[in-house]
Length: 211
Image (cartoon, rainbow, N blue to C red; front, side, top):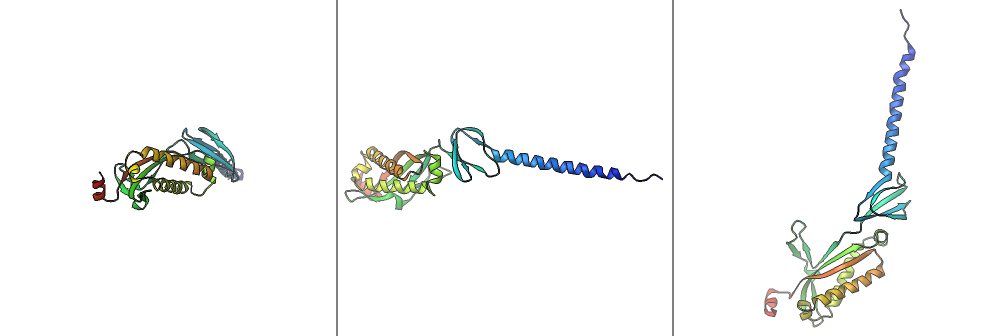
């Protein structure tokens, strides 16, 4: 009767250890790659923070950063026009449909007439670092600034100017004043266009009589 070979029992244990080690190595390498590699497209920039402090801004391409949370990549869409609707709210599914926001559109002109004016504002992110870290909600700040300048300008104009021939100059004045205010707030946004979408008197009867 042959004696059992106890040495053979160490082979499965050694194989398991090798397999577990291989799995751990693959996991670590995978985690290393996943936490080190990031991609930025041509409409974006990435703000890199190291232990929470801004250390770099990178442009389009494939980049590496320190793994395991040492560095973080904050991707920001900088070359995309964004819109701000004041006085109305368009339907996301159908741009031809919109809802009037009366509390934002109704205002008093310099000659004490009430008009409803809707504005479309385009803006971009001019500085991703300031956009991310100089304020908690830069879009809300921008909206408040634009609304303030709109009411200042419309409140100094005549109803005829708002409703007819002076729309272009009013739009430019609002844009210039808003840009100046944004520079003071330094939140990384720039206004690229301000347009009056619609301007009318507050009721159909008054509007028809005016026409």
